[in-house]
Length: 249
Image 1 (cartoon, one colour):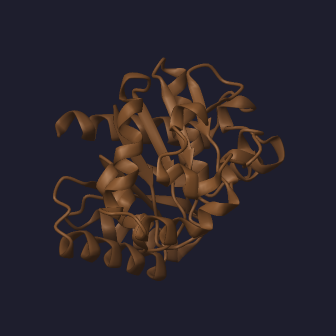
Image 2 (cartoon, rainbow, N blue to C red):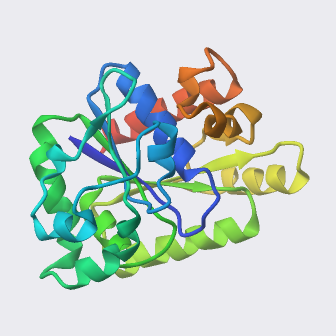
């Protein structure tokens, strides 16, 4: 089982759309896939038409009173399940802080699922916190969407520094450009600048596109209502690039 966290310090960068679409593609390839919606806003849960509610909330979950497998919901798509969000997840930092070895708690919860899933996608809230550290400890890959802007690049630098300072050597950080608008000169210039230097940024670019925005209206992944588009091709290419990176490592 591989755990892939969709994470960014900055909000509004296409993190949830990427988690949902990549999970959908993995499941369509026959891989047993789970999305865990860790964001109290519950956007992934909304996309899958599942109520963002966890019985007992975050407190019972971290206390071990609720097993993850009893909270998992099936989606409308084969091989794709969801562990929904709960508004109590806004207090996850406080709940984790009350435990011994708080950064190990998510990893401990996920371990029993190894026999049931090939890939688990964590849709994470945008901040640096104790929950973030627990995510970093539990994930094999940290996928970080970045909009081609100076502020978004700055948050990536902060993330890279945090990972280096905490010696998270086993965590594979894979940034990629998201919500890129090639009609904007600044977007093009920044992407060209990054590509001209040695970088671990993935080459696939996710466009700023209306069909991705429609996911909120359709309440499903792109592949559920679009057969083929620039966006679906980009996400498919991104997933293949991620698999290639995992194979290397």
